[in-house]
Length: 303
Image (tube, rainbow, N blue to C red; front, side):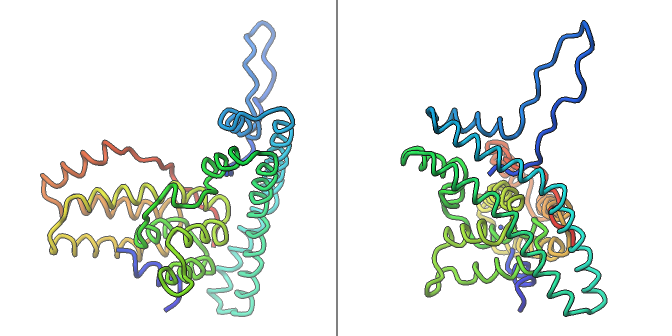
């Protein structure tokens, strides 16, 4: 079974943004001047400065690392993103025409572009960490998501992880890599789920996907926990699994935000078709006490 289908079959689960634009135009004479909009690098620096209490030379080193990082992202958005989208469209066409040689070549080229993009983030982390003392490094790893998925999802279940991954619009190569790593969990040298999550986040996903995944996984866990707390009898539990399996099959063929909407509709269907009025009320009470922490996921790669 290929990795793409495997992900769908078993589902029944730092700062990367475009460079902020400066405020357009100058204020008219006599009007009150608006404060200049801070760049993404400056906002990021101020957040780190407040969290880490940077001193003297540290400030200059961290600021330089962040400015280099966002400058590279800005340049990449004008070239690299367009290359990935163009090659992804070509890949889709090659698949339709059955040109296996071209499919293989385009997948390799897309993977290389994504590897280069991930390198920007890795370099930025290395440069920032080099400026910090040991206590600051521990804090930075924690707030930047480098401390490992255990801090955000200490006991993530495979189903939760797969449901989140299915909403990212991964290309086939990424699906296979993620599936292989998850299938090895608990086996000889396969490591723990936390190690698998770290591997997927750092070696399989590109930065935008990793950021979206970090938001999606807690929301998936929140939704699934709202159902688990109901302790549904076997008949209802089987219907829930069937609905989520159908959603997984649909999401595997879709891209964000459609893939996320498919799962949202599935949980709404569970409310209407499976749960009793009392169960719906209890589930809603739990959800209201733990509000969502996600934003709509945008399509990163077009295929």
